[in-house]
Every structure is written in structure tokens, then in C-alpha cells.
Length: 299
Image (cartoon, rainbow, N blue to C red; front, side, top):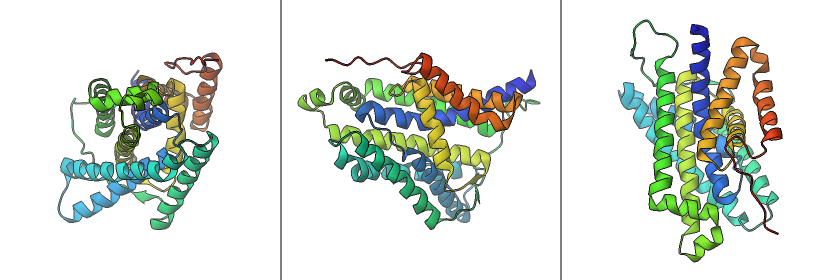
């Protein structure tokens, strides 16, 4: 039973990170129906920014939770700026182009950011400091560590705040209007460009949070972590129903548990086989995803 709980919480932790990144994918797709394949690289840049910031702050004598908070805030701001810039450079000029053009641009931006970080940093794995301090919340309980607990709680809080933001704020209502009918929203006075920029900023900030937390837990990063995490998070978004915020979270958790239990009870060699096999199975029987809604096209 203890081993099962370890796998359960391990999958929950992994799924929480996938969910944070998948939220960015699903928000962008919901607004402009674009798969931002450079989103995984924003996650990677957030992790590298936090590493650089934490190293500089540690030299100034800062440590503990304040070091985590400040380096995390710096990573969020820097990554959000990258997300905003990418949208303006790579996607906005192609907004009225054929669907394939922005997709190719997104892939090109992903490759560019990977090589940019590779040249600016190194191809080797770098050690990442354990920014999350260990603490004891229950004696003699080892099935979940402090880092895992912080990741799970942070994901839950971020998802709740995002849901409330989308539901109750003026910008959130504008996002829902643009997602439903961009042309009508524009006619009613909604600043569509501002809404799209805000979507990229929020999604990039969430990806940065995931990058900082998981890097602190694992203890190492390199320029390629964004590609792997991005593909898994995209899978989670499609699995849950791309365009749906609850679907992105559910898809991330289901994918995390699938990988965790497949690794624990079968073999780590089959981790990706089960993850993508589950995606294929879901899409065969429910093409819109678990919580997605089938769209009807007017003729």
C-alpha cells in the first residue's frame, strides 16, 4: 500500500507540472486556435532564469524560501516577457495567414530558442539548487516529500486563481468572448490584440512556475528539457480536451499517473509507450478529449 501511495503522489507531482504547462497550450488554442510549440522552451527558459537569479541572490547572502520566491518571480517576469515577444514576432504577423504558416513559425521558434540557450549556456546538464526547503508536516511519513507537496499545492492554487480570473475579471470575460467569436468581440469593442498578448503572458508565467519547481526537485537542467516537457504537456492538453482549462489539468494528472504506475509496476522503458498509447486510445473513442466538446461546423 505504501508503494502504491508513493507512485500515486509521484504521478500527482509529475501531472501537476504537465498541467501547469498544458494550461498555456490550451489557453492559446482556445483564443486563436494555434498550437504554440515554442511553449515548452518558455518552461526551459524559466528554469534557466531561476538558476541564474538564484545563483546571484545566493552570492548576496539570500537563502531559504525568500530565495525561491524572488528567483521564481524573476523567472516569471522574464518568461512572460519572452511569451509576449514571441507572440508579436512569430505569430501576430501570420494571424490572417493559412493555418500551416503559424504552425511552421511556432516550430521554428522552438528550434531557435533551443539553440539560443544552447549557445548562451551549455549542452551539458547543470546542477540546479534545491530551492524548496525540507519541512516535516507529519512524522514518520515518507511517501511524499516537501518539494512534491509544494508542487501539488502550487498547481492547485494557480489553477484556482486562473479559473477565478477567467470567470470574474474584465480581461477574463474578454478572453471568453474572443474564444467564442473573435470578430463579434472586436465589433463590441474588445481589444483582441491585448487579449491575445495577455493570454501568452499568463501561459508563459505558468510554464515558468512549473520549470522552477520541477528543476528544484530534480536538481538539474539543460537546454533540451523544454522539448520533452512541451510534448508531454501538449499530450496532456489534447488528452483532457484542448481549449478546456479543467481538461488541461485533468489530462496532466491522468498522464502523470499513467507514467508513474507504468514505471513502478512494469518498466521505466515503457513509460512513454503507455503515455502516448493512452492518448491514442482516448482519441479513437473520444476525439475531442476527455472533457472536450465536439465542434459542429456550419455549412
